[in-house]
Length: 189
Image 1 (tube, rainbow, N blue to C red):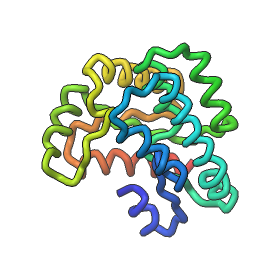
Image 2: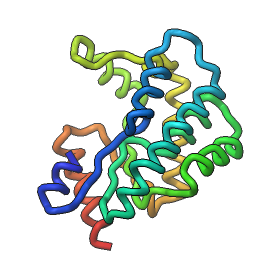
Image 3: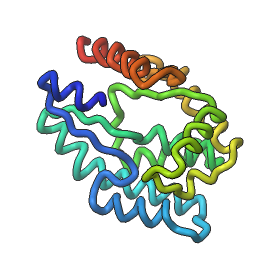
């Protein structure tokens, strides 16, 4: 919705996502999320890093060089939250892997759509029967997702200028209004 709104207002936008924002990334995403075998936590960390490195080098950096705005559904903060806090990796190791994969490229603005884990699980279960396919991350425990959410909120406390928390408990229109308010301020600065 944000990318569409910005395009309608004349901005040159690339909308992408991780994992899977490049052809190689799509194959890595499929291999990771759709496998039935147990994935070692270190393999998970490095698979996401490989996807991100490809994404940064072949899509994000060239787009930024061309003067385009890049909107990515997830980026390095997700690795910090999911593999760091969720899987329990040492922050130093996770930060080294992120630095290696991104070359230090950080977003200027990050939006975190905050809802409780219970609300998120309720919303996901409400999507059953739709085209959405469950993947291995959907089967994680409530405790795992509590650690992930806490990690995201910790980033927001440490980096309030970049990392904005949006209460996502309202309707889609209410949440979109909050997003547009934040993005307007960001683009005006």
